Image 1 (tube, rainbow, N blue to C red):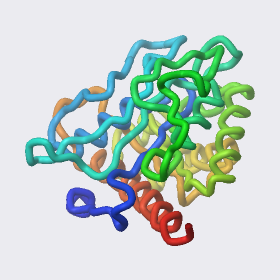
Image 2: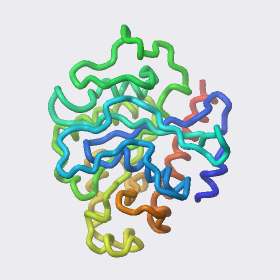
Image 3: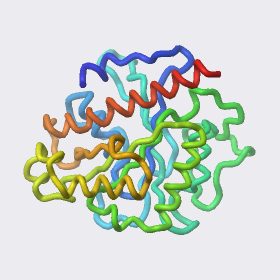
Length: 263
């Protein structure tokens, strides 16, 4: 799987990189997932996407829109996929990312560097507004990042916001997946032995809960354990992250090919 990702090439010249948008509630592990993927690819600890590990955080640590590109071994060379890390979803209208800003990103209207405003979404008068986006500017796969240990605690308001975004993505025919993080906190058995993850009834129940909440089928839900304590790579963590990334990249690439050859 690692070799497949390292050797991956896009199927069409119209798009030079696959854009993967991560969204979900604050503290779900979006930035940590980006760092974890990079850690697997680089083979050492990385911190490219700033993540906050504070307990009981009450605000999103990410405030600016940015696509994170992952470096390859050759200087100046990057993997042909990138992650959009955005502000987390929160209850209310004065905090967290505005749902219309997520829709702007899906459609390719938002330029990198835009500072999120929870009260007022990006509009056409803003310098960071891309009025004529092409396929390469748009999102090619939408990934919800949900914490396995706190799925039941996600507020109904945040859940409705996620459903709204998902419905918009569905109308755009953008493929969707779920990365279910923090599996070690959700199941003591898995915390002790990560190889038990697909035999754990607790993890399966959490995956079913994710599916019911967001509406994504079980075979598009990927339980992972992000790197947050370890400073060296762990084989089983790497395998789970690679399983998720292999399918997400495939979903995104298939979408791009479909868009190019049906236009």
